[in-house]
Amino acid sequence: MIAEQVGVCRIRLVAPAAHVDHCHETGKVRGVLCFNCNSALGKLNDDPGACAGPSLTWKETCGSQPS
Image 1 (cartoon, helix red, strand yellow):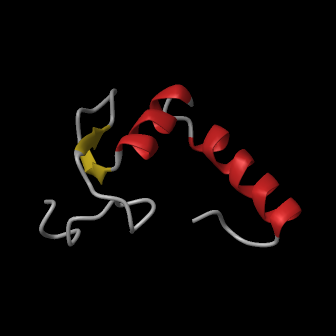
Image 2 (cartoon, rainbow, N blue to C red):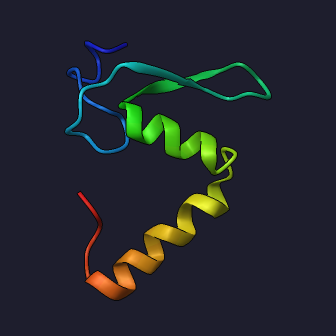
Image 3 (cartoon, rainbow, N blue to C red):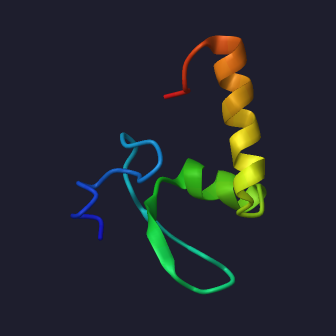
C-alpha cells in the first residue's frame, strides 16, 4: 500500500506515510497517512464534516489549501 502511494501520505501527498488509516466502524483500510494527518482525523472523530470546516476556513482566510 505504501508503494502504491509512492511512500507519501494519502492526504498531504508530501509527508512520509507511516500510519495505516482505517474506518473504525467497518475496519476497511483507507490508506496510509503521515503522523499529523492520522492524528488530526482521530481528534476530529473521523467526521468528514468536521474535516471540511477547517479546510474551508483556511481557504476563506488564506486563499489556498494548506500544504
